[in-house]
Image (cartoon, rainbow, N blue to C red; front, side, top):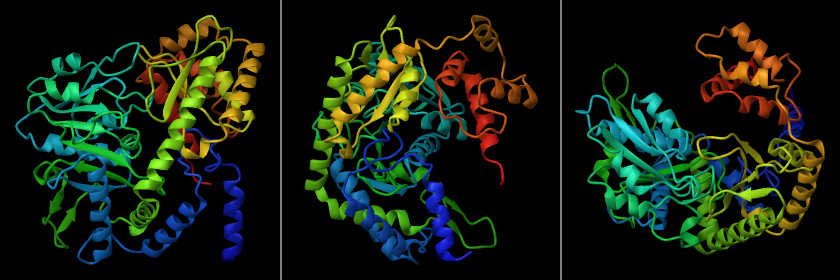
Length: 466
């Protein structure tokens, strides 16, 4: 195929994706609304994509750019002259390395544990799974959805290698009481997951949450979120080099070069790093302050509009640019139907299943690109609620719900899973479903482990060679 034909096919494939610009996809993507930022990032990516971050002595330009980004992030998050960091591929890798560093710093602990509020990002559960650590989940306040300092401290014991808090939490956009938690910890490593808020909260002045809090030992912040850089770039900061050392890896036990890794990856394209470096230098501190203000103002206006709609309720007190809302009991309509109706109107809002004290809800990630389109969003949301009210609640047969709730995912065969996926509307080779309300309502009746397995089987069916 010619280059032109390949690019034409790629454009046709991309036409079926959610839009990444214009503020209509309120999850997964972050849009500054500045077209030159995308162009600059793409150009910088192309200039450095063939360089390899595996060896900084071979590609000193990448070393310089990484140190520049780490320094900028450290200054933004209250770091000192002792603060060090590493650029990673994204928030999950930063969280993985924070857990790895904490675990390996305590080799005498035979059954290491990490203490998390139940609202902590699932990446920490993934890290615990990868690195054989136990998760100690601590319930959050059922009204505010913020971590409870006394409960977090009470969960710490001799096996605890790391305590985690969120700035803010993804699910509800609320800021954990980080200074209060830190004050109750006695020498235990304390990680602040600021992956989604670290490049926007400092411009909104919510109070101390980073290294300006005594006791915080590491902070993660994603640049492909509110620094509006191309994916995927994150920074994991440590308060000093000694804390970082245990996530490094070295091996001379083979006949090749001595392998030295600062992250999970070995070979790393210089493209994402260069793109982030270029965008951060171009936008600058003043530019980020304006973008943060625009995103926050949009979030405030959207929140007010949501709260004005009969039957909807915002969860907690979101202080940044994320929010989640649910349906009041007895409202007479289904939240998942609202999501489908919004999709029909060109908006993507993210369904979140009930968990603990958090009811099923719709999540919104608001960016600077949403400023100016708040009224259009709220008009379509009101129309979607009205359509959902006319449709009525999604009803799952009680016997089906009881049957699903009693299933044990560990004993089901692949054939049984295939049958369940077909029943849920996720099988049969018919392609991706266009409406998800009934599917989500059925999945909501499944216990967490069963839902995980069903969706993993669905994912496996999607990723098959063509």
